[in-house]
Image (cartoon, rainbow, N blue to C red; front, side, top):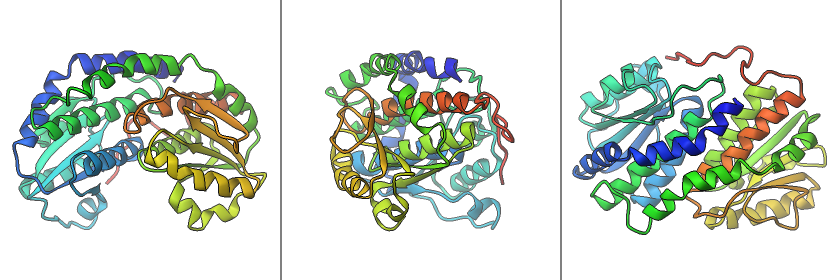
Length: 342
């Protein structure tokens, strides 16, 4: 897992160096008159799809949401997706329910796109278009570099559709080019070690964020659950205030992802409420606030890029926490690298 985490800067560079194929796909999608975007995924890839949903709505101005695969695979329904871009996101491309959804969507007239780490997979075969996320072999069961490779691939696709040319806007390209360097910078920090020591004996915790950071909160929660077997509940900052905040107290650690932008600004109210309840708040972001007890620093970037950086120290936190609790993060109990669901 440590090796996989450490390879993310070079994975980003590989994706950017081979972006011509992504641009061709984005240009083809932009040529079509699509009304909405539907993403379908499971597990870690579902959190990448959530990020893709925010990107599609904010950057493309198109309604977007996550499909429920069981609608097709269990109930046999076949929604009309004739004016949709349907994106299947999967590291292995081998989950039968995702294959069924893309096959059904394509037969209904949708533009279908598979993002996988396996160009020869069944999901890649049934989709009209395919993007190889170029993550390379992943050693640990817990997904790390494949997740961020999915994020960057989705970002390139959306930015390419936005311009209509397949290439990002001129002011966006330099920001994308900095991501490998910024990812390497996040690997230098050791703030996660202090936080792991704080959480070692916790029974449960909450992970929260708003906007683009909500996907990061969901993924960080999953990484902690599957490596440390610790109950980690993920909520958007808004949903947290709509009830679950009632469980916050001195015994409830909270990881709050606070970036630069509207989502990060909206977290101020959440953190203030947690402070009044005396919760043990750890923030993740470029700036430390007065309310939290600990902080994990990351480089400051536009909020839409922050999920590619914020998750890296949280992956390291999950790894360090698992080892501190005497667990083996490379082989979580009951899990395998590929999960087949219907």
